[in-house]
Length: 177
Image 1 (cartoon, helix red, strand yellow):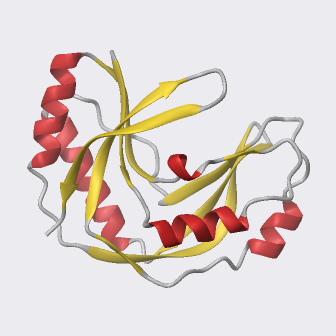
Image 2 (cartoon, helix red, strand yellow):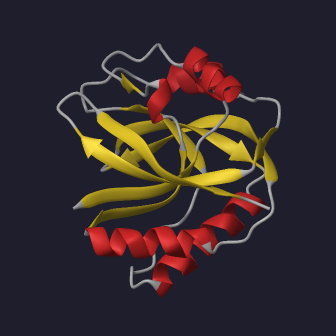
């Protein structure tokens, strides 16, 4: 079985900018450089045959390159407790359009649609209930911005869960344009 997701990998300069913004929350599990990505669609566990179909379907997506920039920091809550900290991106229209194309391609190979609302973001930390307060990070880095960067490809990733962290490897890259 293969645990797959589709994502945009930010360029090195943006990843360095994100890494520099990390810190100040006790107990946070900060993402490493290798883990920084903007998920377009989580697929989950699939067998080898469906993984091949996913690869073929993603290869048929046509979308123009576009620009994004970092835009703020926020958090997601689970049952009233923050469970992750993320960096937002803007503008979101083109990345949302690419997300819809990815979802439609995966639907054609038999995967169910993703019913969750899509909020483009790059997760920078995972939190458990023992993590320290995050309010000061949101205040200090909430205005996180970056120069615009070009998104000219996206990738199919495989995720291997280890005791320490998830390890992501690129299965295939798909050029835009």
